[in-house]
Image (tube, rainbow, N blue to C red; front, side, top):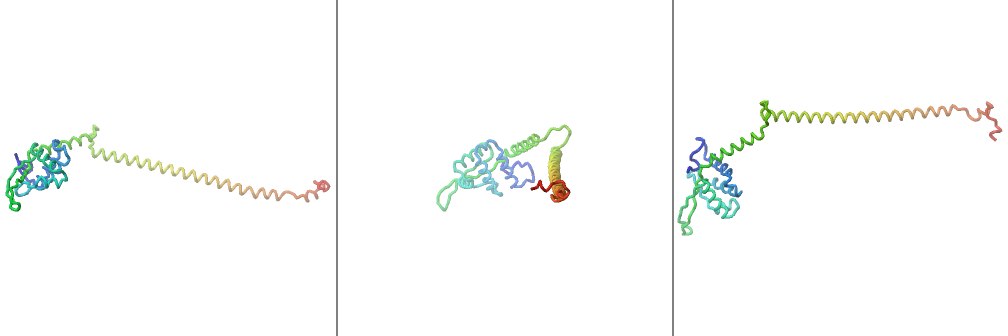
Length: 222
């Protein structure tokens, strides 16, 4: 069994980086996904690893308070971590001078055996996800190029729709202007025809003129 700083894949890996790799790989293990709180327990446990001793000393009750779960949940998580090879637990019995009693405390060591395997699995999953979304074109175009072409095509379609909408609006405005001009022309003709008809009426001979001309007898009007 190798602890968290043993069997490192990178010679220049820092202690914080090793803890981060352990937490990431621990969260990927399907055997530990039965309860969501188990990942939190492993996270807080890794946060309490001492840099000098490479060990963690939190009590199970303290971890339960941090995670917000029951003590039995922490105990089940610790058993699962030990069984799957993520954790090594030592028990040490010390005398507490304050309470004058003997107490057993747990000393945790994070194991690095499964870290690289889980990290490789994460890398493989990411590669498969990229391949699933990678289009098969046959022309050697990269996904980024296709994404650019697609966005350019969408932009062109949007411009076409915008131009067609603008053209329709222009046509509607022109039609409205024509209707207004037709209405104004018809009104102008009506206004011009009215004075002509009035002039014609005024130009007609009066009754007295007709009598004087003898076209109408005065006796007929009586």
